[in-house]
Length: 388
Image 1 (cartoon, one colour):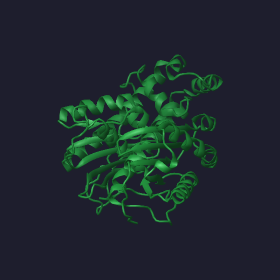
Image 2 (tube, rainbow, N blue to C red; image 1 turned 90 degrees about the vertical axis):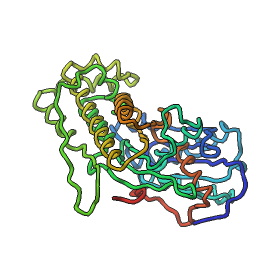
Image 3 (cartoon, helix red, strand yellow; image 1 turned 180 degrees about the vertical axis):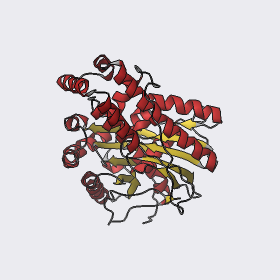
């Protein structure tokens, strides 16, 4: 749906509720973050070892109104100052998405403001572009506006490669050239961490503990993925195999007793930091963690650089929760420098799910007058761009 763009100050309220973070943000002109508020559900879901969809929806209902009010207060504005409301329409958990969408639709209707639907994956890409615009970055590592850019979106639910370009009207187009065929990278991190008796979410625990282990102690290998004949040039990922390899290693090495003891100790000390848990891990366990991380990061790096060369990418964007991983950032920066490619990451605050990225991704759509229809609903399996 297209509407007439009215004059305004460019203030967009973004709302994000696709999974287990209730978030609201106010972003001006697609680059100035005036407020970015997130209500985390980690403590709730940690006791179950993963996100429980029904509980996530309930918490969104409880948190959304206070979070929006907090964002407006932090930005120093009222509802009437807004120029548009943006909300995640997918992908994500159906019930969780609906909470945000129904609230955003009612708010936009009541304020008589445009409603803008945003793909969560596009939001992650714009988390990087947002900070590039904010600092007018050319010197701090962000790719210049030369296309195509290659974006790796890597999180607990997604591992995708996109060729991204800005269109003549300012909106962005995307072509998917790689995706996971099974588990996402972040999902593999969480499952392996749970298997080893570590805390939740598992990614940060694995990342910090990997520093204490030998990354060459356990050899892991990734096989090639053969695309369909009609799929074109693809650079897909698969992480279920390494997850299974870790399980078999644990079983054959008789590590069950140590895992059980570590899990009990961590559960008995909810405030324990990953670095403190290093004392609960023997050298074999720490080597396994370091080897797992080295292999996963290596696979992400290898496929991304191959795709960048194949498609002539002029710069790299890496975003999503796994983009906060320290080893991933170090190795991507080093390899991109060797290849002569600029690479950019979001700040740690914008790596995980947030609403600032949703408001930022909505800005080009606002300028182009691309507004959501009244019939917009949740799209749990929503895809981004074309495939091939």
